[in-house]
Image 1 (cartoon, rainbow, N blue to C red):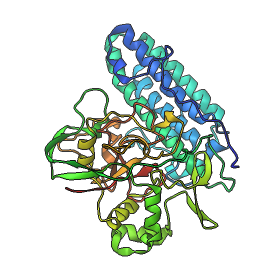
Image 2 (image 1 turned 45 degrees about the vertical axis):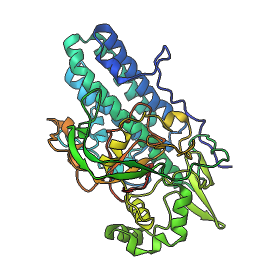
Image 3 (image 1 turned 90 degrees about the vertical axis):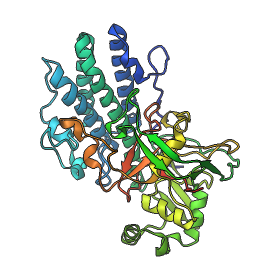
Image 4 (image 1 turned 180 degrees about the vertical axis):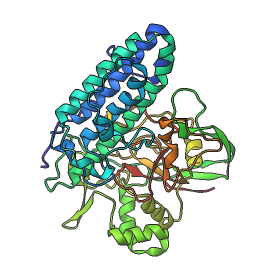
Amino acid sequence: MEPTVGHRPSVRLRDCEGRMVASTHLYRDGNARRDALIGWYRTIRQLTDRLAEPLGAEDQTIQSMPDVSPTKWHRAHTTWFFETFVLKPHLADYREYDPAFGYLFNSYYEQIGERHPRPQRGLLSRPTVEQIGGYRSHVDAAMQRLVETADEALCNTLAPLVELGLNHEQQHQELLLMDIKHVFSCNPLRPAYASAQAPGPGSIPPTSWIHFDGGLVEIGHDGTGFAFDNEGPRHKTWLEPYRLANRLVTAGAFLEFIEDGGYETPAIWLSEGWATVQARGWKAPLYWEEIDGEWQVFTLAGRRALDSREPVVHVSYYEADAFARWAGHRLPTEAEWETAATDLPVVGNFVESGALHPRPAAGDGAGLQQMFGDVWEWTMSPYSPYPGFRPAEGAIGEYNGKFMVNQMVLRGGCCATPPGHTRATYRNFFPPDARWAFSGFRLADER
């Protein structure tokens, strides 16, 4: 049995009266809006702390590769965001918890000032985990005081900033789980972050194709409710008739790709993908390990036998594209994916399910399955600005726009995504060689 760090964390996003928390509450008037604002703030912030609860102080300090950040850094950085962009500009008597934290926990905001190098975050044995907890409490108390005393005009200013900060923290909740999984995978003990059960026996629906007519469509966020700036402006684009696979590509299908020599066949790989495979010695997805002729997979619940029914996960764009070519198909564009997902309910295997791993498709296979949750789905679209996109002025404008090069778009959310955080227009992005994210894919083709 794998050593277990902690029990499954509680991840329900509900207010004190048991209602699901939604960002639309921020647009009420008067005291109701202030109450909703601080209630939602507390709920999101408490979830971050609950996700860190199973981890010891030693766990929270490790950085296993440059792309991974220590857990305590995530907890501090999300706190720094509120301190820097909300409290310091808007709470007149606010006193910083520690002025040095601005240098330690700034991520990439050049206009804010110098920062500690990202690959060296794991060297920060100080401040301690306990001090980071004190930092979070200090900022939380100041945020409550600011919101409770804000007049209507200030509340109008604060609401979008707080909403952005909370959505930013939700992104880091997902990153926290991605990163600790990589950290634990590098430990010879293969510790488990939380207890979880693999799905029981049963079959999954066969792969079928859902057809779409194409034509002139509109994609992008329409301005109702929250969205990140990279999700707009809404605009028209042309789609040829296309089809999407009804469900995600499974681990079993990917195993067939491996056994057919997929990682040894240069003809099906993009040039940079093939060079990456050769340089890094890839033979299977990240966290797969062949032991005594049987494939094992490392999960947040420890190592277990590979379930051929579950979606393949932790593959790069290069691997997804090579599989699609091998199978005689392609990946969808982000416009195709969004058009297909627009009228679907945003339900699926998100972090609150407690699975913390992709689950096999269920049901009879009618219609599109697994469009939200389970895995972030690679598309064949490069991450670039929509027509008419302009980043916001100031440091906040560095949030998304500065990364619009050398990245590919993913859609849909994953098993580590907090509830209520994703939507059909959400544009995630990673470099094409990234594998530590909960990334998978579905196939597409022309009609």
